[in-house]
Amino acid sequence: MHDDGFFDEDIATDYDRRSPEMFDEAILGPAVDFLAELANGGRVLELGIGTGRVALPLAAKGLSVHGIDLSRSMVERLREKPGGESIGISIGDFSSTTVEGTFKLAYLVFNTIMNLTTQEAQIACFRNVSSHLDLGGRFVIEVMLPELQSLPFGETIRPYNVTETQWNFDEYDIVHQGLISHHCIVEGGKVTHQSIPFRYVWPSELDLMAEMAGMQLRERWTNWSREPFTNLSSGHVSVWEKVR
View 1 (cartoon, helix red, strand yellow):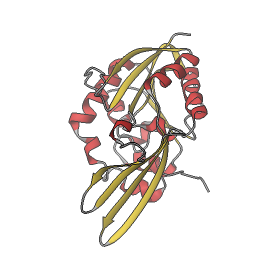
View 2 (cartoon, rainbow, N blue to C red; view 1 turned 120 degrees about the horizontal axis):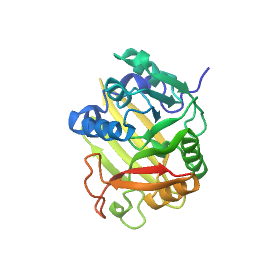
View 3 (cartoon, rainbow, N blue to C red; view 1 turned 180 degrees about the horizontal axis):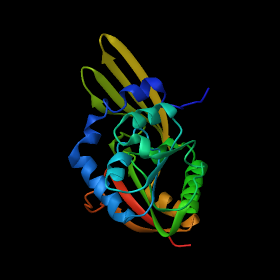
View 4 (cartoon, one colour; view 1 turned 135 degrees about the vertical axis):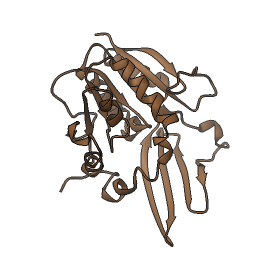
């Protein structure tokens, strides 16, 4: 039986419904436009394609999109959507799974680089991406910045979404650069809980990984709308170019 990791059938069934804000045109539209501009008509590779939130609108613009994902359950949801059958999918770990041919653009969105929970795996991801890019091709990552400045000295827990029906909080392991995201949801009198491990990563560390893989930083913004990246940014969208 295939291991879907943390994104099994139960999670895949409700994944889109529990993140409706990510489908808001004000968020999704700039991301799709940003990526389509960089692709410039070339082939596109999405790592962690999931249910196709970004891949499907890119394909609707006429781009050839291929995806890699570990979870068959998530990919099944993509296939059920209009246009989902036309997108090529490779099942596997995106840090090591290879795809035939080369690409003009590769991308990781919505903190997905942090699903690789070791520095070695994140380095392997950059090298794998580089091996798939055309010379001059671009690699884009959208990822949060660790909110360590919000933690009182010695504390490790940061709540970020607390309502009557949902409690979300991050648990930081500063020594090992780890983060466990906890999600508790109350529906129909039933409480469900999921904890997912991540490895947070700094922009300078990503730049070094890119350099090791033959890429150089070309752009870094706070968001898809290209607002400047500053010391107040809570995340970033970074673009590296394959130069060798």
